[in-house]
Each structure stands twice: as C-alpha cells, then as structure tokens.
Image 1 (cartoon, one colour):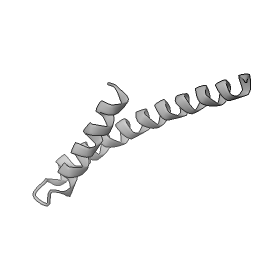
Image 2 (cartoon, rainbow, N blue to C red):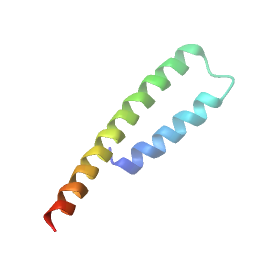
Image 3 (cartoon, rainbow, N blue to C red):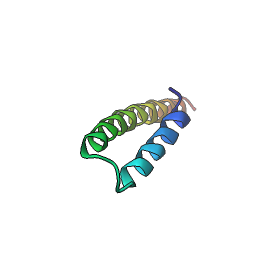
Length: 59
C-alpha cells in the first residue's frame, strides 16, 4: 500500500472509531489495523529521512 493510501485508510479508521455506535470488538480490530498502518508509515518516513540525510552529506 502506498504511503498516501495508508494515510487515507488511517483517517477512515479514526472516523470509524469516533462513531459512538461501534462495538468494542470492532473498535479493537480497527485500532490494531490503524496501529499497523501507522508503524508502516513511520518506517517509510524513516527511510525517506535517511535518504535525505545521505544526500545532504554527499554535497
């Protein structure tokens, strides 16, 4: 999944979790899915930061 798609999915999950009619079980599952997506996005950002840092040292 692309970074932007992951961010959009995270936003959808947040909206769903804000729904007061959602069950506890569904909330837990959405939370787990969101946590995985956030971790994935964090890894992508860390990789991008390393690339930028490496490029800055080459100049």
